[in-house]
Length: 448
Image 1 (tube, one colour):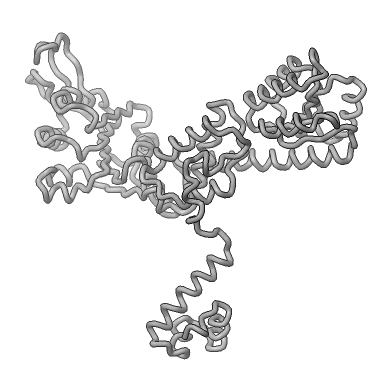
Image 2 (spheres, rainbow, N blue to C red; image 1 turned 90 degrees about the horizontal axis):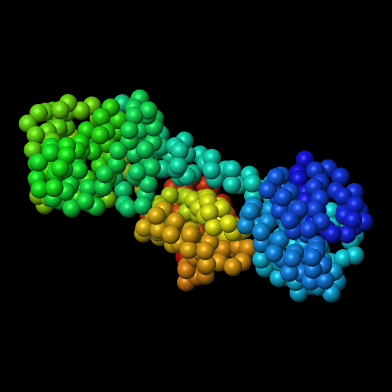
């Protein structure tokens, strides 16, 4: 049974309300402290809240404070405010703070039951949606997608992971290359060993060699002790070389030799140390263009790209912008202890219309900022900083999408057939009467 907390300081009214809600697991509280105890202990999804609570039942301050505390503790809670006839302003204020709805006394049990039942249905739907977002069609941990192209990438990762093949992940910044690299490791026989990542673009060239290969004591000024490198540290596990396209030319030859011999030699050392490690590389650069320009070794490219996996940018993933946005909103709402029901229609349109040049990493920044700065129950396009895009958003209505597709197909067929109706009908696989009907429906007969 769904849990319902009744917060009411009048014992008689609280008893009356309890009998209104057959089919619910009813909890009771008569002040802010006892209500928060019930919230923390039972986490009810539904609350009816009288704003006038002790020690100041004549005012709404205690009830409004409790509302904010409840939504901060459990953001998805649906709170129905029950208040007096002369307190409509505070009821509206409560809704602006995140309450689901309000009801003005005197209590009519049937009407209040209807409001709470609707709140319960919405709570169940939102809980289910959050579960679906966390358990999307993606088989890989940490990756949210329903796009066919991205799901094919996931299946490729699953096929490649059990092997020891060197994998090169290709994709623009923020597309999830490290998430896929970790999935390759987690699904392999090396999952119980180390996953070691190093960003080749973030470390100065004069330090990168010692980071990768390690050094002996006294190898250079400041080398006061022996230090193993990232490659050796990843022995029996996986080494992830992020932004490998930025690897300096001076290190490309040394990395190539390691890949051929599977042995490292520390700076200042003489001994060759065998290392059993799986290499995964990633880059947002066009390595073939770099090879033509002399910026990347061709023989190294073939060594690191036994398997290449291209990751599509967010703008090319069908439906993923909204799917990921809802998951991020849920995550950041919990982090910031705020209560958001979702996105407004204009916000959803803007999310789908925007190109997201920074991909998921940019979306994380945009939604985190909106969660922090927003002040309503729903995130708007203005909160996202994308309100200038709402007029450009394509319609999601199936009828419009179908009509536009039919119009485009008919115009293309008519052009190819030099406006010959019989030939165009054959090309489209329909009868001539059907084509005439479509021309009339889409307003194309007059254009001929």
